[in-house]
Image (cartoon, rainbow, N blue to C red; front, side, top):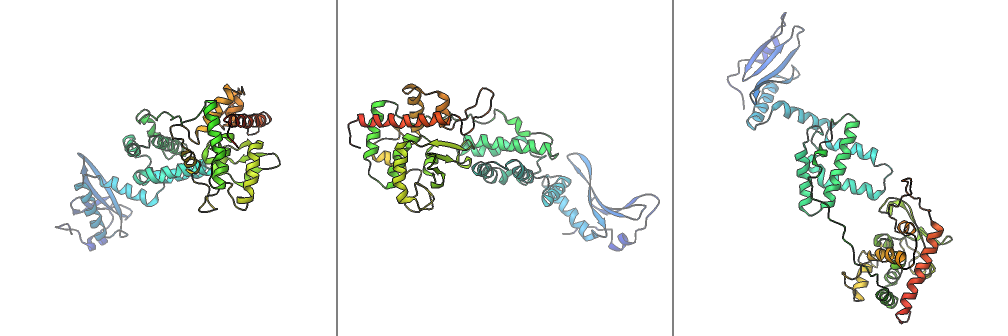
Length: 404
C-alpha cells in the first residue's frame, strides 16, 4: 500500500532546516513537505481535477507523520480515481464531523425555535416528514450544497407512493428551513423555491357522502335511535349528527373537557385541526345520553373508550361500522358527512347565519378586519342554534313514525 519510489525519509523531514524563503521537499506523486522561514512544516498534495491544478493541505509535520501523509495521499488518489475532488471530500468529512451546517442541524434548530408553541399534532407531523422522507437523503448534506433537483428527487419519492399532499407539505417544510437558514446566515437562498409548480397538483377535496334530504335524514335518525350495540358506540352514533364535529374529535372526547355547568364541550387547540381552542354547546339531546353514559365510562379518561382498553378512545371505525351495520353504504353516508348535512340544512332550512355555522364547524372564519374569531364569538347565538338543530333533528326522526 505504499507509493514507490519514496525518496523522502523521516530523517530528512525531521532535519530539514528553514531558509530565507519557503521551499519544498518532494516525496513523489505530488506529495510535498513545505518548510516555511519560521520553521513550520506543512504537508501539501498537488493534483489536477477536471483540468485544473489544485492543492490539498494534509496537515502539519510532525503532528502528521510521513506515514500519515502518505496514507492521506493514497486516500486522495483513490478519490480522484472515483471521480471525486479530494478537497471537496475532505470538506464533506469535516462538515460531517462537526455537523454545524448540515441540513439536519439547521432543520433541528429551526424546529426548536419555530415550532415552539405549535400543537403537538403540528409538531409531530413536521418531524415525521423530516425523519421519514427528508433526513435519510438530505440530512447529512451541507445545506449550501443541496441542489433543487436533489430536493425534487426526495419529493418525487413521496409522490410515488401516492402521498401528494405530504409531498407538498414536505416542500413547504424544507422551504421554511431554508428561510430560517438564510436568516441565521447558514444558507444563501431557498433552492426549494425553484420547484414551484414542479409537483403534481393536489387532489381536489373529496366530498364525503352526506344526506341532506329531510325524509331520508329522518329515516337515518330513527335507525340510529333503534341501533343496538355497546353503550359508547350507541351514544357516539347518536350525538354525531347533533354535534357535527370531526369524527376524530368526537371519538377522542374526554370527560375533563365537558363543562357541565355551562353545558359546553371545550376542546383544546392541540386536538383541533386549526390549532385553536373550540367550544361546542351541548343541547339537551346530547347532555341526556352523556349523563347516562357517565355512569358507565365516567371513571376513565375518554367518554367513548375502546372496548379493548379504557386507556384508548373508540376506534375510528366504531361509528362507521355501526352505519354499515344499519345498511348504509359508504357512498350514502359517512360520520364526516354529518358536517355537510348540518352545513346545508342549518343554512337552507333553519336560516342561520353562515358565520354561526362556519364557526361551529371550526372553520377558519375571519372578521372583516382579517382577524380570526375567538372561541367565544357568537357563543350565545351558537347555543341557540345547536339547540334548535337538535330539536329539528328530533322532529325529523319522529316524522319517520318509528319508536324512540
